[in-house]
Image 1 (cartoon, rainbow, N blue to C red):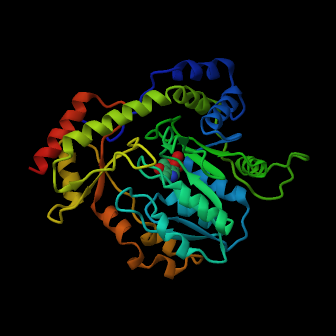
Image 2: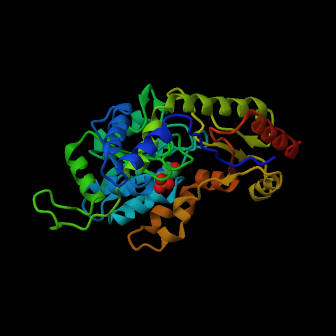
Image 3: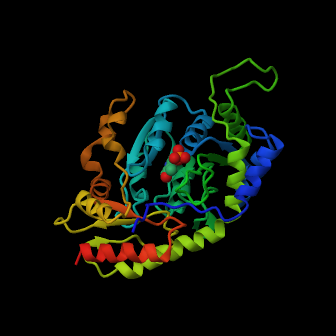
Length: 374
Ligand SMILES: *Cc1c(COP(=O)(O)O)cnc(C)c1O
């Protein structure tokens, strides 16, 4: 049997909306689906504005750029995350200050933030990892105390709630990605969400080559072409209509794995619930706690059985691209600061959990994993 790590599902209005773009000729970055998608997402997360862009990586770059922070400012961020986060900070001329993760939730350990704050710290980038949110109350307290801006990367967190509030609306500025393995996809796509007008205005300019609203073709800054097309927005809107169903399905997949794999002592499973959230299992991660097994070997053996897996993220403090950057302070990236992030990136991998996977496929994955650890 072949079980890819992700299988997207298009069971709603995707085709109908997409054909409408083609039939009416509205295929570029103008067209009614863009505004509908932007408003739909903004409504979902309780923010005033959505700014649709071409992908999640560019959404992060747009969000950080929209803040217009002085060059050389420091930004707190997780060590265990995707490169897009550090990239956005470095591209804006800012200094990333990574924080180790919690072994329980794999999210940034909020207790380690305060000791890393300096006079240059201007913002914190929080990233909800793999289906559980960052504990936001302490983040908001620190933000108030030190007057810091909160950037929220909710690329993996559509439909996830923190104390009942929708992720993607918990920062001063937040982002989603709509890559095919996210809960809402439009092939490639992203969005910036905010209620702050000046961030919205700057984000829109960054997205569109910094065109001047008074005199077109005069540019105060460079900006980029990060525009989303109406066709992407059409698919995204149809996907947004299905979000509740998607989350239910993801939880069902997560819970089946939890029940089936909980007695294997060599592995550690994701936390199903914390006091502030219920896991939506963006991916179903597994961490080996037995040194007798190697992640690469396990992934290879599952691969031989047709089961797709992926490594966990690689820590920011070890990223060659980041270490080459002059702006990066070596003392912020010292190996001994990140025991947890080192451990999970070396011992973690995730297994298939796409919304489109069948029960039969899932049972096959369970069976093969049980055999491996028997
Ligand atoms: C997927 C992802 C991104 C990047 O999104 P793309 O659309 O793939 O560029 C950013 N941050 C996190 C946490 C992600 O999981």
